[in-house]
Length: 283
Image (cartoon, rainbow, N blue to C red; front, side):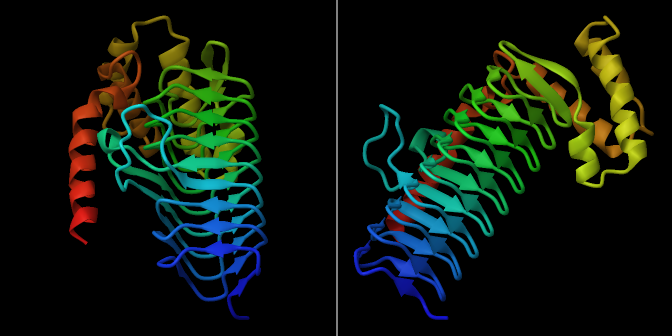
């Protein structure tokens, strides 16, 4: 099958489309867009900016990808959006490109599902196999770890980190980091327990799941100061890998500002953004 472009679609000069790409009616693709092989784009999609989309993606109608960031500091710089392979992007999803101060790049990994009407703001990083349900709102600079699951209507404050294998309940308000492997729910949000179902689906060994259950009780139910508990757990050289990763993530959050580790990375993001912008300008 060859590339198919509907006659009503508008493909700007300079855009690059791979093999077997399908473009639906009234879709608009900008001049700095590159789309990988076998990607299907539905009707009335807008893809703009310096946007790189990988292979085997399905972008359903009315999505907007690579639009300018909704940030008052943006001055028209050629910042970027990168989307990996095998993602499903449903109706009315919006994913904005980055800002210079935030690293100049919004990045989406592989095999993610973005359900209808969710929003991914500038400079977010979405790792592999993430599920973002209907009407989820991710503010700028949010990191979502692999295999995290965000239920409908959840909203994350800028610079939040949502850990790997975490489950966020519907309509949850996130103003601080979400620990990996945990269920977080509420307004304001609270850690409710271990995401056992998600871990089992990811085929995490049962001994690791049980170790996370024990770690949850020590951290959230013992009544001891969080920092003291983490310091004690860190000394356990025999702790399973997932427990060690949980402790490390919580330490980063403790060291961050207002419960958000990425808040302390602002200067690093700005440096990366300037470097990326210089790289684009040299091409």
